[in-house]
Length: 254
Image (cartoon, rainbow, N blue to C red; front, side, top):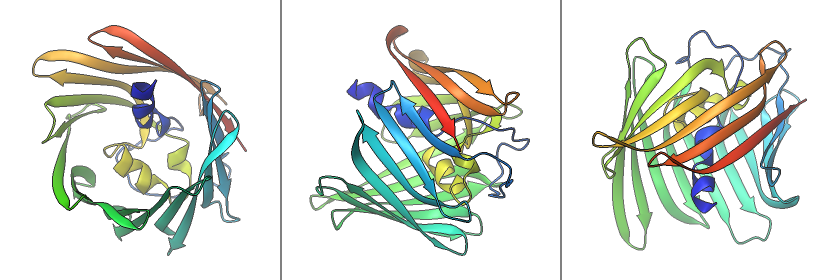
């Protein structure tokens, strides 16, 4: 289960509402759109979204088996999230993230954990698409750098993602619908830097080492409101083509 939990981010931030230009970074939100209220994973983990009066995100509450684990709160400047603070309920973890922008896209993220610098990431774009992520990881007086390169496949909803410190290449396919999180005013830039520039529903993540397909993550989705809202998702995790686990996601809206 620890392996599956580490892969959750691939799916959690990816789901739906029609988006004709999947690479756009605009955060304009239709006031008639129903905002996401919560989603649950296997009826065990549940994430709740709370909003300010202007539909910007106030906080996210994370629970496991009904018990609160973390609360993340957000600070805004000029309608952009410039800071988030995530605190564990037992007081043992305090994570501070600061964001810097160039117009509507995030170009830098600085993370402190319990008061210590943890990592600094810079984001490079080409033709309004995320092209490269350079992360400097700090800790224990050591400093390492990780570079992720993202290549858009021409004329397809597909990207190739490669990291300089890993042998694997991820080939990620997605649809043309915004995720529920991407519809939250001001939150889409964070979704995009988290998901390698994707703000859409991830259908398939094939993971190759050399020519060999070693793992894959495959999702199927159910929609409501004439296909506009994601209601349920079932995700299967494979290693060397053997099914190693499944997860069920269910979504609620205000």
